[in-house]
Length: 389
Image (cartoon, rainbow, N blue to C red; front, side):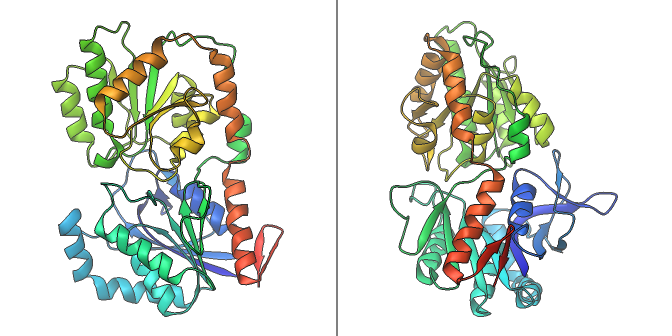
């Protein structure tokens, strides 16, 4: 069985010719490709980034020319190169038994349309917030509409998140993670350290407007103005289009003594940072199911998150595995930080609850769940970790 993955994710080749990318993408692609005998990845070729991981070594990688610019400029660039993109995508979709597209994303959307036109078995995985928010774009609405329209039969439609019922008819929830079972087994949670004396905070993820990093910076400034001592220290672990403006804001707010921008990190360096932290803060304005939640909780870190996407189900009630605040509200985030940092609580028990939640929510289980859903819907078998018709 041959899989073709079409994604907007930026990828590049290193000096040895090895294809690389960042974040959880290489790990997730390796996990889903493991369900098949062969895999081809159609991705966007980009400039190198820090914190890179190799794409699966046994996959064929096809690099498309990257669209230029962002927002409207990028859309125009995609339109100008549309026929070239469609020609390349179609040639690889046509040769595949199954197509997987992680959406939303312009190149991924084209891959979905081509797979539908070629009547291929299709796995669509929606990674943003399925619930419409102020951050939901027109193209995200179009993508969700297509998923609803074509769900069922040969099309397996998955939405990242958790819910009491399905997100829509024919669409199922799926959790998201970049954590492997072997990584989880190697992580030792320091449960015996009581209290939060060091007040070390981490943010993990893309530094972009919808992730709310500037909201977190302003909340820290409010805590300083209110006289909180000692002030917590924040490590921003990630990169993105808003990093430069976030660094400027850090200077303007006079927080450079307590805020550090570490950029993209590989898994080993990320885990080293999490091992030394006390709490993870994820102030996203919109989210589906953040991989950072599980990475943090695997290290016993409670998560302070905006109440978005699956955050309520993952983080739980107040103090269960962290705390929830309304998205975008600086004052609420500052108040929750103060409460978490200063109130007396059973920290070893809190860390233990965080770690316990992650058990069984690994990439291995993620791939197994996707494979099981595909087999059930297509009338296939999942044998020794491989999908068979």
